[in-house]
Amino acid sequence: MCVPDGVLIDINLPRLSGIECARVLKERMPGTQIVMLTIEEDSQRVFQSLEAGATGYLVKNTPPAQILQAIEEVHRGGSPMSGPVARLLVRSFHRPPV
View 1 (cartoon, rainbow, N blue to C red):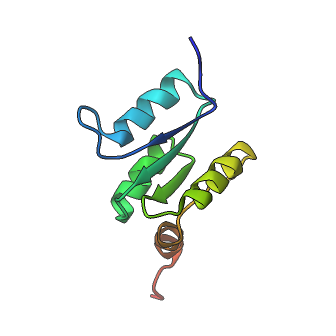
View 2 (cartoon, rainbow, N blue to C red; view 1 turned 30 degrees about the horizontal axis):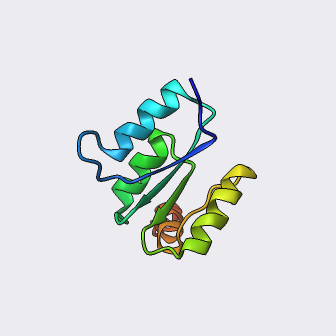
């Protein structure tokens, strides 16, 4: 079986959600890097994708040159995120003072 180094996956797939697809791929091919490429920007989907094994998360309006840079970044060990997605992650760690 040929195992890819990396995979781009959309969340909205016809039979199996991209999130579930990422989970299955990581179980079967743990070394494969997964980057979500989707229109979904809500925090729940982002966190579900990362928990399922995604290494990065890009929105579909990302320019093609940046998508290529993201693929190279994953290959170098990084975790590329679109700006709005990165902001969601940062906000999730900010807690209002009690």
